[in-house]
Length: 171
Image 1: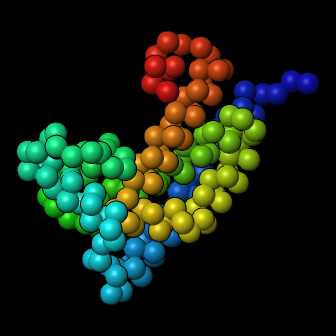
Image 2: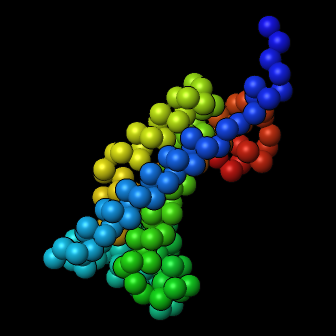
């Protein structure tokens, strides 16, 4: 059975629709949450990361206490503070961008393991799963950890398909 080269072409339109749905759900979620009494309230973990990132952004790069949680997240937030100033919304927007990347990573993983259609389904389900939006709003390490985990998984899949030293080192 011969397939024309056009049969192997990637149609980005369905994935673009899913990314638009992702953006729409996050805009809606952020807009609704921003207009609540809890918009600026930080929980215990959020306060810890916020204060830690503030200390790092103010020059206290290495602390003198035991590390709690995911240290990379505090440095990630401190980098955002250094680039854009101290703002909860900057962190939330950055995490929403990471969430969009996560949607693409979920697609990439499922498409390479199963099929492009399964990848689209997985990305679509990712968009609809409300806890991802919830954690993108909160100042906690879940979104960054998810991005790093999905990136590592995708790189391992790519390495399995075409072994290369750079791919395995990145994963």
